[in-house]
Length: 414
Image (cartoon, rainbow, N blue to C red; front, side, top):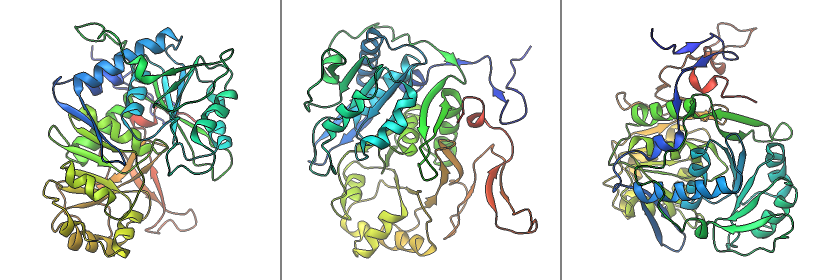
């Protein structure tokens, strides 16, 4: 008898693939060991490169260290992290052992961090401790320490960099990621990470806080992976040989979204530095031979107002698609990209959000791009425009998904 694909027919009760077992980290790190899968770019121009095997070994070593600290399946691990390789390793190691990962960027204050992290009762706090000239306000190391002091169940603070911090040894130990990544390579036949149910929790995200304290939004591993693989492979046409660079931070769901591209054999390119001028991100696109670049309308407008022409300044011959999200992409910005970046290259406006850690509407490599329009609905999602009750004939309404899909099954909760 065939295994059921879905049990239940409403968003609140539907359970997709109830008999399936998987490990998110295993799915992302399977493939050719020698393939380069991650490049982390820094503000000083240096780069960190990882092959799939090197990344897998680092993830496995950290996962083992976290288990020795008492982190178990279903526990929360949190990070105040920058968009670098260390944050990726921390996230994948958390997923490998079945724990749940939540992160924020280091540019928010301690009260905002605590509103997000205190309800999770995390076992481990990853933190960037090294001060950077661009950091606002209170030094980031002090913010990490103040946060840790309000998280009484912590087994350890793990420093993601070589910064320093004074820790009360009677309460919480301070460890360094670099030290935890030293050791044997584990099982030569593979790490043997446990596989979990399709809905097993993977990420805890947070609402923006514009309507009160940030609210937790949790996503399961199977739904997240399935939705991201669909969006990457089918809507973005990503595959082996591609390089994806998305302008993001650890506090935005696009950070999690781009991470899953590893499951499609894609190399992801990260940048943890500041926006120093209109050339900052285009320079990375050119130097790293990026094929798909993700940005936002604000950056495109910034470049336009600076009278900057990326196509004239850099060799963008490898670039084949630009993705844009975060706010409205206006019709004239399509013209600017065509004229100043690259003619006949699709500019795809995508829209989704933290609630689904994915997209409701996005690109389609088989359809033309019309200025001012998003190309298509996300495949398999019953996306509609719901008109106001008092104007049922209206063509404009609320964006809704009218039927269950894997990302909205019980692995998703608020």
